[in-house]
Length: 205
Image (cartoon, rainbow, N blue to C red; front, top):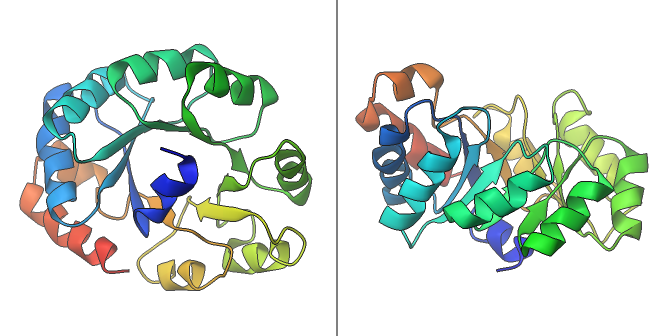
């Protein structure tokens, strides 16, 4: 599955930081049932890969990937755990090569025009725009559009329900991502009902 296909499958990608691997299946099941089929589990916790493996096995219809990829070895580890795509907060050509070697669909992050041009010249056409608010928000994306008509972005970082429509209205935005549907407090409390409500709202964006 190409990364473009992953991004086209949804308008919102939940970014999940899972502290307890046993929360992975009920959390991801809740999000999937609410209409969010693409799920990004960040590699920020010791439980992350176990969470990916559990969710990928229990929910084969979901598209489970990993985020916060910082090291070249993360791709093979994530692939072996069942991840179908990977996302990093920045752009580094060593990671681009490692993703290719692991056969992993990859979404690197950029913040500036120079980084966008570097990615474009390497043949990449889908990028994460992060941190979206700090990088100029929807206005920043609008400025990049005429310069790089072939690029499509998934902005994340500080996006709220209130300004999500502004991002999604931009012609170069494929989808957005973030923690809108999964506040840390609700995940810690295992409040799946409240998360389901937020997830349905996010799926309707």
